[in-house]
Image 1: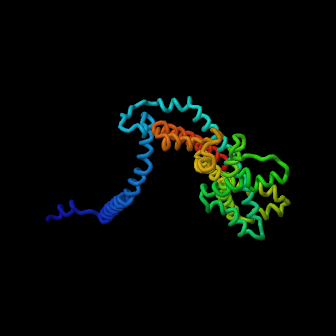
Image 2: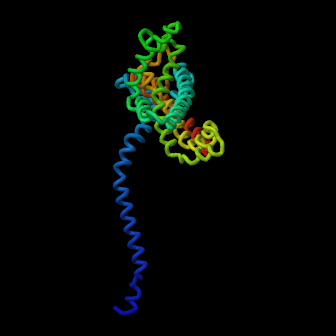
Image 3: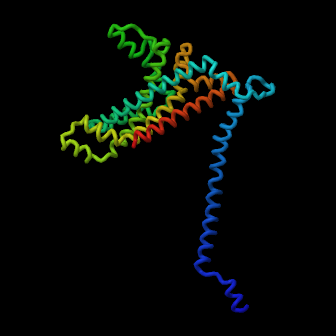
Length: 314
């Protein structure tokens, strides 16, 4: 081979090194993609496919109990019927009231308890475990033990207190005027534990020098909290409140166990109505339309709260 041919085929060492690095990175990318493929396939199977299936079902007249009957495409008829269905409108109103009351109350009670625990000097560990106890129990267990026992209209401790004070008997879960409020109180009691856990962790991570400097400058406890501590908690508070609101819109188990949506439709929620229509009634198409309507509402509420929380935290 002549010197000119060698010169034509010669590659500078630096360029060869770059090509080798590119090939190595490309090979690593293929390996990463191959390793992530099972996770993506699992996600598609348990998330993407059910979502697509419910969209398709909401556009048909599919009923599980009509064995062998052809499934007809009805378009947006199920969606249009939602806003003419009095049961759905009642469930929507109850769910909205539940979310608008339970979420703020849960945050306020959780913040109050977290601040009290953060400043406690005696029995802090004991009360921390005590307030976190509901978080260790399932919501169904909480409703069965606390809900039915505490609010029993005949032998419950709250009824005994009312009787001792000379107050009339209240049918907490059997009276349409008090059933939803009783369930909201139970939800606040159970959900507060999660709020306490996160807010207490956030409080303990704050530098104590800020409050100490405020006290040196003559600021009281109340003023130091609102002007120093609370603004520093805003990012965590915004995330907690968003989670509480979304969970409140999806309420199902506590209502299903305690009242089943009753008395009448006083505690009916959208999630419970979806269960009754789809699982108990077999009306998969109408239940799918309800589920997607709830999903859209939750997405809109979460989007608004997220934008508001970003400005709030800033």
